[in-house]
Image 1: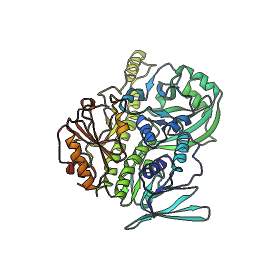
Image 2 (image 1 turned 180 degrees about the horizontal axis):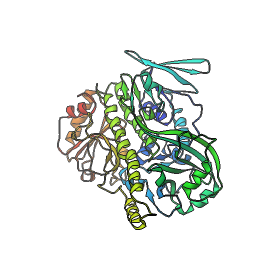
Image 3 (image 1 turned 120 degrees about the horizontal axis):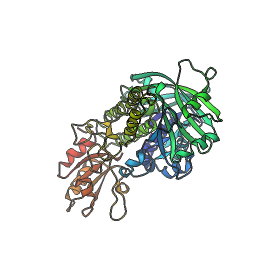
Image 4 (image 1 turned 135 degrees about the vertical axis):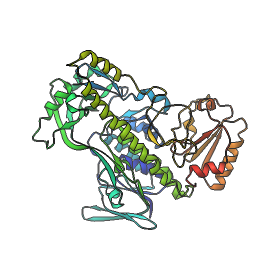
Length: 523
């Protein structure tokens, strides 16, 4: 019997497998595809995602696998009417929040990311991978979970203590476990095109530091036409709404691309596919021994690069909790906190960002028209170009404030919307500070719980260490009595979880047993 079975060996499933295996957990992965899908999606990897890659030991390999030359800007823009209309502003300003993370963001096709993760997963002796097998059945009993997979006429039967479905938006695991989902259907058929055109690269040379372009056309009522660079000098992908009933034979896709660009140019269509614009979220992320993650738990249109990044965060959150449960130091409520933390974050992502993008763009194109009132349009367009990632301004900053396993901040609620700040807050990402010796705080974090004691005597750190040993919790205490980090963080004591979120922080000592029991799901 394995510790954990994973159905779906795409990026999220592989990330979860690596997270678990690195913690000593025995894992079996079933993936129906022999090779990664060639469709370029999931390209924008945030700074937070690259922190995961750093922990999983693949950051350098990922950066080496990128299909765009090193040093080329990672930015994007939004244009009105057409890409070459002259009205555009910078979009997706991830560089503005870079100081609050440990590493830079990156951009490469999902198939390149998956190839790197496949190689890393295969390096673990405690990961058993079955490529080319399709999960056919799944279920659970009182002490285990199981799945059956098929490959041609062969049958594979696997049993584990837990099963995680990372098998996409039509998840068989979710359906087998009886987990329902709620959908917000925008009733739009979308086309996804990959095209090659050296001439197009010449047209966009004026946007030298940009790799993706969002075109806001008034006729589309807030829905996007979107370009993303795939391979330098060679290919782009493009997606846009198309009329219901559109297929590969009855529509002029080249004309659609020309309209979005605002110019005609030579191009070759490499592939044409379709998808329905919808937002869905599972009503449960857990059914006893069965969990779901990634698109199996939540799916949405590729607006803003949230999909793959949200899935990786699922893997990081669930991974350490499963390991803690399997190794005996996780409390009875720890695994339930996965849904309690991750589900509201995705709901906020959908509501406060993806849906909000569509609503805001719709309101703008309905209200402002340069052909009717150019001056008013240009004033409004200029206001849209103002950045929203400045210090103290709410932006995409997922957190678990108010989580049942976070001590403090009980008036909050996990959300994707927050501010970036070096002031540590319970449930929020642990921000970077570089110490006088040149080491970064993240370099001192361990695979278990990490407790920082910045006080003069270090006595509370000793108490926490003793209590952790009594409770058999892997806790590393780091005493830094002369560090200036306390002034930056505004806390003398900080407890950091294995996923690098703050479990508790404060300036006054509290009962060590209560702190550890609360933050590990024993209360």
